[in-house]
Length: 252
Image (cartoon, rainbow, N blue to C red; front, side):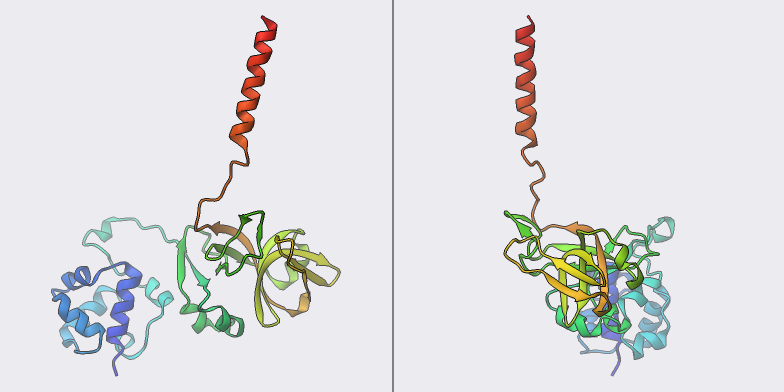
């Protein structure tokens, strides 16, 4: 069985090409391309060669193995006929843990093949550092209707085990520990870590540092709603302005 159909579908997804746009590049009909992707038809060798050359992919790789997202990102894959004239900025690709993949991640977090198949976020981060996305799944990090809600996404930078003790108390982290993923604030007590929720009704969790399999320090967050940042600032400014006006009146 050829992997051609799966691979060209994944190429389109990674490169942001619709079936129509992809088909036009190689003088194909959209229906023909759909048949290739669904495995209902096999392409001519000339078509395979064109696609392989265009994206700088080995023909053997295109046909005999399912390409990963990371592999495809290494191929040039011009998106437009003017692509050679465009200087493209390379954003970091951040694998993201979702509700659907969280359970598998706990046991497969150190398997490169599994990580390569996770959904990815393309972000302007330092590509020299290792980041991981995590989709918030509960209300443990909420307080008085503020904080992190389900479906918010946090981006963590990997912290080596030797550095964990050096983190400041209260640092936001998510960790893989004893068969679960926990997103909370970190506190260090001797050789243990305490993971504390912002929600006042949630008990602390305490683990030995040695039991932590992965720890990611939160650097960025994406919210599904607009957080309330004002904290009454507008009202305070209005009060100050009124006080200044009152002072001016008294000075006259």
